[in-house]
Image: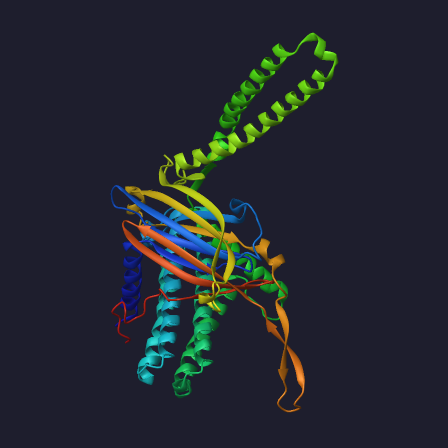
Length: 508
């Protein structure tokens, strides 16, 4: 199969799988934030209802009471833009959408290379050396071809370009270079992991890995030379300043291009919106109650008692009435706020609108209702569940129910999905964790003496993400491994990335 046909087949297969229903992914964004995302297909007509539920089980000894909304960051963007032809790219936004489409294809090519490396490391792998080399090399050629075609379509200047459009084309060229380097780095990382694996048949594949690494180095050297020719900054391993500048530039380019797909969010908390009405209504009730009692006591008081012990009794009753009034106001606000949440079915209402520069009417694309819950419970002790012992835990539950509206203009421009990305900061609990390293006694076999080594002290937090789109349910189960210094990794129960065989592609 030709490289162009392979790339198109692989991208189309992943696109179709993503369009069928909500794809959900969970990962570690950085040292303190857990990230989960869900992709909802944009309907051709009507609306699509979906729901998202995230459950995080934290050991009660490490849990810190906090306001969940303050720890969560969320944004929503459009996904799946098509690359326009060279003659059709006439606006800055179209260039940016095309560059993002190219980046998505490069990411899929890198994922395909990594998945093929995992298949090659399997104990059941039976591919010949030549077939494996061709299968791995074809992903490198596919990434190179994607970058070359994107530069031909979007980065080549035209005579009619205005100054700002010419500048944007130069940024597109640099962004293509950055994403190509990232794809090559991902391929090199996957290949290194395969070489370092313990499979018995890996040693026999050394010539294949050497040939693939040579091709990776050749493509990487050519791209580095291209960047130097164009005046783009390179990552110099001997210069920390150059590395810092390269990373900063890469981050700015990524944000510059992704900004065109972000939807504008309008959100409000139900309790905050209704707080003043609830507080006023409850204050009227409590004040009326207090005034009625005050009036009743004043009419019963006799003049003779105003200078006697009756004055003290009256003062005590008045204080009790006012104290009860304040408690009535507080309890009434809490009770009515709970009823408001139940009436609206959420704690927060959010609407996502298309940006005005893309849709002048700023149409609502997604509307959602969100809630956060915290509760304490207990689970059976995993060491001996039958003994009746339990382990106390705190459960954070985030629920999100929304509706995606159809939009012809977005569909015509190539948009296929709406992607929600949520990041939750778990750093408040780090201070309550034990030391990241603990000394463990071991017996030295040579000297027959006891010595201590530092062993990692990690905690495991189960994560469960459920998504329901159009009646189809998807679930992702994982375990977050963390320690006092931050989040370490995420252990998943399954890999959702399709393989070549699963999408019907045979290596060339």
